[in-house]
Length: 162
Image (cartoon, rainbow, N blue to C red):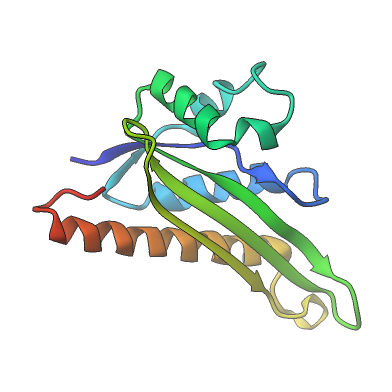
């Protein structure tokens, strides 16, 4: 039976005003393809934060995520931060994206998995990667890593992961 998961807003530690929202949407989309998860709509999980915190960096703290996830009735929560989301200045403007995420068991508050990844794309002026495509690659790689870990642990725990 799939684990019911909510993807929470990512704390935006960058200068790009929407980096946290963009990465949250990309993670949600990637997680939807993982059979082991039933992913709650972003609109539902993000709405739960409205009015509670003025600063998403505060809202994305471990305890706030757990309390909100318990109210939403999910088994697990994905949360974290965007550490880089920009074009590197220089001779070529290379897109750079950095993300750190965690998967929490809501019942216990235990972090089941965590990873961070930073990638630079190819130079845009010569048909290389864009900031968006680099962000998609980072999110896809993080979710693939999560899925592999989930399956690995599941194989050692009589068919259940976590």
